[in-house]
Length: 304
Image (cartoon, rainbow, N blue to C red; front, side):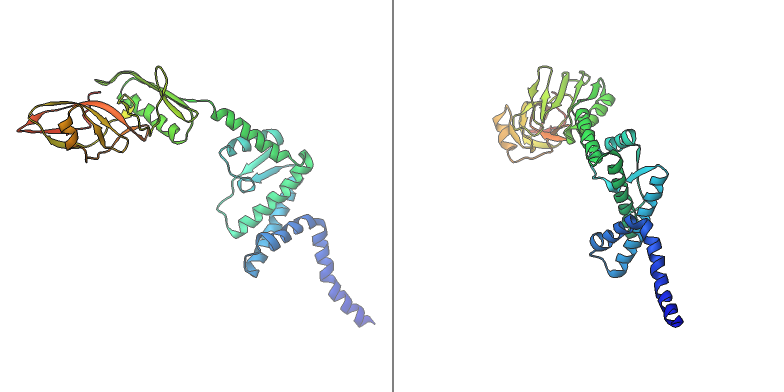
């Protein structure tokens, strides 16, 4: 009889110890179990056990932080977006939730912080309502949209240095399709002042706004803020040339005011003019001096 009781106690002690550990932490163990069976289902058995171990540890850490009245999520616990920084700030201000950035993601850290965030989200729902995080995300998106709708002032260019700075700003905004405006005072010989604005997908040229797509087929006069075309060609000509050239966005000469030169340039292709990083069709005037029956045309040496 005593031997039977002893055997039963030997078998029972491990179960009692396990129950003593599990019962107070059953929520953490349940999250770890979820990681084992679902999140780590594609891993090898040993890797799944590791994930379970680290997940329980992450959930227990979240429980300790909650006990210290500290709420925190990781960047991995939210969906990345253009307005993530606004969302993170809103969580801090509205709910006192700190968003941390963990180190490099591994099996261990991934399971640890996943479980941590799962338990934290449950606590956040208990305190602030089931839709607290979703509401904050929607509000952050609205705030981002309001900010994004405000055009960026890329500045006023009065010389080559400020022109480069204004052009760089406009190029970045156009690439991001963010509304902007800028202007150039006449500081380069042969070029008049110019103003540009990008709004709702349309690039306009001022002062009287008119549509000006960066990749439009319709050519516009080469102006300040535009990068002149690059390339050269030698043509037969007995006389000096003063050419009005129309160049398309692919760098082909569409026409000139000299039919003989136009025929000689029909197969030429050079680097097109650009406006804020985009190729554009342009019209410009250029001179070429004849020498021994030939004239070299430098398309970068435009007059206007």
